[in-house]
Length: 283
Image (cartoon, rainbow, N blue to C red; front, side):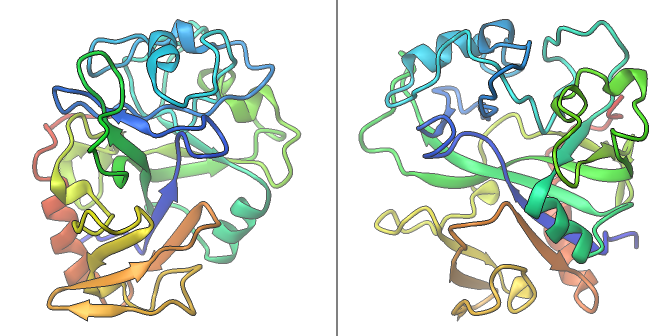
């Protein structure tokens, strides 16, 4: 069994500060995680067509209720895990995720590295056929993508050709800057790509408790996470059978779970999570 030593629940995509609204779950169920804006980036929302949903991100930001981003705003395309997205660089592609600052320091202190698994989650809400948020739709935290680490590098020291258009290479001087590069295939499910995005919403991807009256930050997650998730040392865990309810941290990007001693439970959950992903390689 090649279960990752660390599973990182990594908060990425639009939020109340960056973007101003949720990422959309389209009428056909497609998940479209909206990358956050960043001034000075050459890639703009209008340049990007979503892999799923057959829609342009520039058109989406104009239509999403409450979004405060312009169609020609620069895009921080990171995590970069979708092979079919348009990029301005005509170079080979590999899946990548960059982190810097205090969030990267947290990852380093938790010794996150080779073969560890990032599960990217964000704020989502359903939209109608006109790309307007449905009034009755839940605000949800949903897992939308993943990357298992092959290796990492400091872009101030090395810059592979295939990485030169990544935001953490275009702006190298971020403090504690590091780029994590995805594997070709998952170590624990070798027929599955080592990085990618979940195309369609599925209840098993939802972190938010299914009770619609709760906040999106109130999670229902497998009980094996209890007591071993960083940023949640003082949290109250309420157990209900095989799951726990927890009020997730409102600050922080990278919540690290150490699977040591709980590998079997973690592996069963990962098997279920990735069961619908088609076989293939990341690049």
